[in-house]
Image (tube, rainbow, N blue to C red; front, side, top):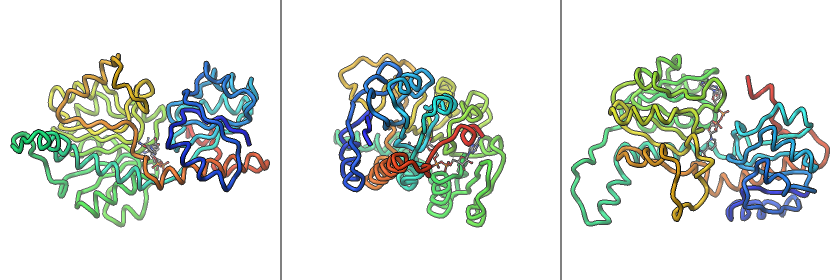
Length: 336
Ligand code: NAI
């Protein structure tokens, strides 16, 4: 199948080309991010392949359908950037990669927690300057702390296990469904309000939906434990960033580690080191000594990129063969 690959980076091309030897699709790569204006680049392609910050709203999907696109293949798990109702109305099939390597994201989450909790990036900058003083680098043990995991799906369940079994935390969890294996491992399910109130460390692993948007807001921060550590490797808009900044300024929030950010679409995945960043909220976040931010890289492992490429190309092969794709995303499932 002819596929227009948007937001294509060198690593996307490397892993897609390697996996494509098995499938033989015709893949063309575009640096551009997909939106209503760039959709015309897909003219003549029955399928587009996109990533987390490509915008598949109704206008883009209309434009894609008008130039003949019938399939959208997301090379990611989340699908909050797609108007699925519009896609269905237009007869556009949407596929995703539901699970490529939850370990990649879970392990990175633990890395962020340790890094921010133990001041590892600050310590490393000091050592590089031959400053071996330890003042200001005091951390906290994870062992014995109360960790709250919101969303115990593929990634959250692993994080809960790592915190509980690996680090000896008391783990509270919140989800629409309870995982009996986690309960057997000593994880305690509680309502989300209880978790947000009682946890010393809150790690977010639920999807972004209207119900979870700004889950961490001024109210949640006011109710949280003093010095709470907030970690988000899921989707930026789970946190109200302005409320987070106020929480940091008042010292109610003791540490923050983010791999995702509400307005990341204007920043992440590009080298902007020669630009003047216009996002004052993001710039303010960077000024706090107890904030650690990475640019949506929790998924970025050899294993995950290989699995993403294989699953995406297999879904496109299913569509081409006229079969119902296993990893199809449908509107009713999402909003539920
Ligand atoms: P999953 O679908 O396996 O798990 C999500 C869990 O959240 C499910 O158990 C679901 O029942 C639960 N949930 C839904 N609504 C909830 C609510 N209101 N409160 C509490 N729990 C709720 O998804 P997976 O694979 O674990 O991914 C989690 C999130 O991580 C994804 O939605 C995606 O946005 C993000 N992600 C981030 C990556 C990164 O590189 N930073 C890479 C991959 C995923």
